[in-house]
Amino acid sequence: MPVLAKHFAGFHKGYSLYNIGFTAGIIGTFFIAVFRCFGIEVDTVYRVSSGHNKPMAIYLYALFAAMLALGLALWLRGPRNLRALFKDSGHRSDFIKKYGDGPVFINMALLGFLTVTYILLVGGQLNGPTIGGVFTVVGFGAWGKHPKNVLPLLAGIFLAAHFSVHDTSSTAALLAALFGTTLAPLCGYFGPLAGLIAGGLHIALTTNTTFLHAGMNLYNNGFSGGFVAALLVPILEKLAERRDNAAFPAINE
Image (cartoon, rainbow, N blue to C red):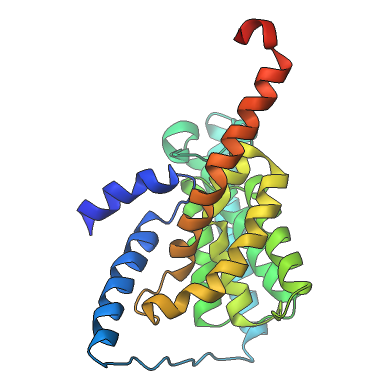
């Protein structure tokens, strides 16, 4: 796993945060291919709970409120560079090292509020998988994610789900939205429009890649996100290069 993860990081150039999820997807795909070659099939199991939104929402909002209070206390006593954090693209960026504990705790709390509210607004359920998704987004608030580079992705995934066959409130669609924020650096670096497009492509792809590894990789969105970044980044880089050449023809010549 470490050898492959280091190698595959170059595939998406760090624009997908869940590189281990991508690596695990590749490994799982090869193992399932071997199993199927010998007639061994893996049955998928889908069990998720429902009906716990009120107590879990109270718990999560209280937890993130405490995190926000701690962040504000540290921020008031330390460097007040929260605005700089929100301007960061999130590409290979260690927020704790760059901005300190206070701004990072504030950022993590805001991401927690944002993701829990998103689940409730679309009529989803706070269950094991979705709460795991919330905590993953919050955790990566220390490495690459903040509301400005997450919101366009959520919007793109929601719109794509809303106008397609997917139910925006289903656990599968919610996991695509939550874990689709793996593409936050792409959105932060190339802009919100790129984030909208990436989000739409992500939910289309992630709902089709589970078949490849038959659920043997729990981080299917990391697997899909690596492919979305690998597809879009070269195109976006070329468009940015042409824009720069058009804006400064004399300098570039």
